Amino acid sequence: MPIIRNHIIRFLTFREVNLTQDTKQKRSEIHTLRAFREATRELDNLYSVFPKFCGLSEPEYWSLLLICEGVTSQSQISEQLFLSRQTLNSAFKQLIRKGLITLTSCEDNQRMKRAALTPEGYELVEKQLVRMHGIEEEAWKKLDREEQETLDRLIRKYADVLKETLAPYTSTLKFLKDQKK
Image (cartoon, rainbow, N blue to C red; front, side):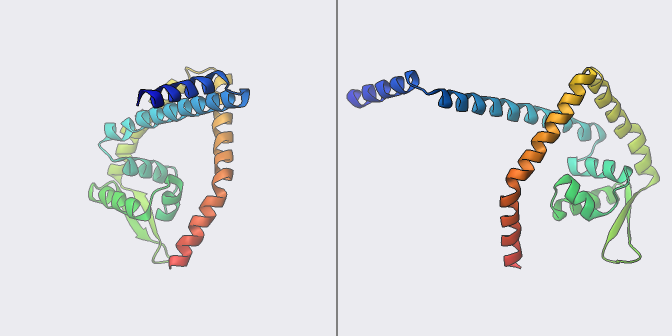
């Protein structure tokens, strides 16, 4: 057994010494991607605190925010939050139960529902969501203008590139889902 282990150690050492520049570049890119993933996970964790401050689940919180901004149909909210209709429907049921929103049928399509904030919903938005936005804005202002613009530009660019890279896979998934129907 030690012979095999020694051979493996020599092989790995040889590989480390003889790494090509291309391989070193790939390792560097993988390390950078891992660091980016960790940073985005950390950011997601920080943003998950917002709903907890308000006593809401994440789907409830972000749905209220979108409703407040004028996005009122469940399908639009589902698309913008990348939530399944079932998850969003559960969140809406909780928001209705808590007295924060109402749902009404659209005149031209009875199956389509529009959400509206109740007076209690408006009160929660004014007290909590506006406060959370204030905290977010306070943190944003700690970046200088150039950092804000660079961060925005790079995140949008990465989202566009990722969307473009995912396109063949998402169209295949959509095709497969349509085939099951």
